[in-house]
Image (cartoon, rainbow, N blue to C red; front, side, top):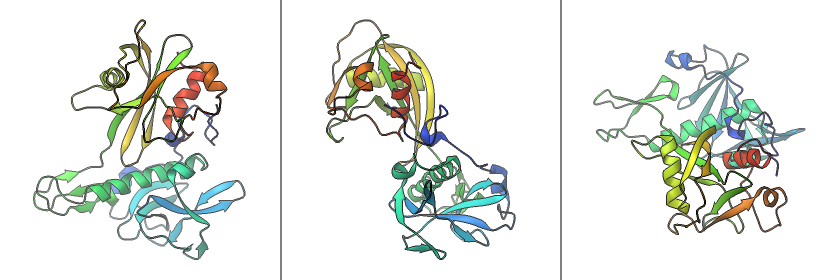
Length: 299
């Protein structure tokens, strides 16, 4: 069981970044400083234009002389500004042919650090704009400011900033050689993964880990430790990864409203699956944590 991506430095695949977000530039009337800008089009299905390069897929950027209306400034790399805009699919981008339109799940493990980081940021910020076009205070249409990084209620003047929903995802083990994996009914046959759930208001991430595990599989846990985090812009989650140990000898009690099935798996079963078991895809932080546990890096 290996990650199978371009990232092999201990980070989750979608946590890679190769550019400077240049947050101070967002305060300027023109964050690009008058330089030509590379603009990525993201369609309503969250797919982007791609060319097949000699070493794998690359994004097709639209070279613009200035930041176009409605675009969100993403930052820069090597003096080149980058931005993203919502748009429609086309066969070419500024005269450059498009081989296909693909999404983050398809591309996340294939892109290099720069384009992977830009793509995650682009999808996340555009999803926020799609879902927050009106003020939650008055219902008035908001105005976009700071190169796409704030919205303002025109009647009250209140600013709104991009939001993410914190979620915990946790590998629960027995302190020896077994891990609990569960599956949801909507997943493909044989797919199992580590447990996960959203953080509730007024709750710490560690408390959310303990609560979700007990809710889903009826197990009490101890020794909750943070592992890593990864953005998951489907549409706006931040996955906080943990590892935890079952407290004593307990039986799994599945809550059918939460998951369909859960059971123990050994490291050997995960190293050499029998063909009936499907683990999470390598783009997910679930796979990142599971791989590290199988390799003996987490305990």
